[in-house]
Length: 196
Image (cartoon, rainbow, N blue to C red; front, side, top):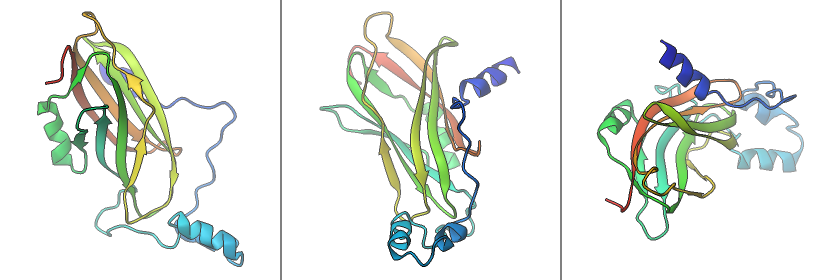
C-alpha cells in the first residue's frame, strides 16, 4: 500500500502558486461565445471548436496513441499505447538507450468530444526502487479534432558511465488541469554501452 501511495504522489503534477484552472466549458459553449465576431469564429474553428468529434462508443476525451523516442542517426522507437492490450504488452517489450546519446521523447494523441485544458505528461524513473528522475512536460490545451496531435519534448542526454548502465522502471501519466488522469502505465528501459 505504501508503494501505491508513493507512486501517486510521484506522479502528481506540480501546482503553480496562484493558478486556477479555467471554468469548464463545453465545445458548444465555446463555439457560441462571441458568435458575431467573424475573425474569432474562424480562429475557434482552427482550434477544432466547430463540433464535438469522436465515436459515440468511446467516451475518452484524450486517446494517447503512441510514445516515441527520436535519436540522431537511429530509426525512431515507437511504443503503441492505443489499446489496453498494447499497454499490457509493454511489460514484455525491451527498450534500450545507448549511454550518452541525445534523444527526444514525443507523444501522439487524439482529443475527442470536448476541449482538454492543461494536458501534461509526467513520468518518474526508478532504479532498484529508488527515484532517479522525474519529468513533467506541459503539452497544452486542445480542441477535439479528427487528426491526431504530435508533441515533441525537449532533447535530453542519456546518462553515461558504468554506474548509469542498467535497468530502469518508469511510471507515466497523462493528466489535465481538472485532475483527470487520461492514461497511466508502467514501462522500462535499459541503458547500455551500445544500441541493441
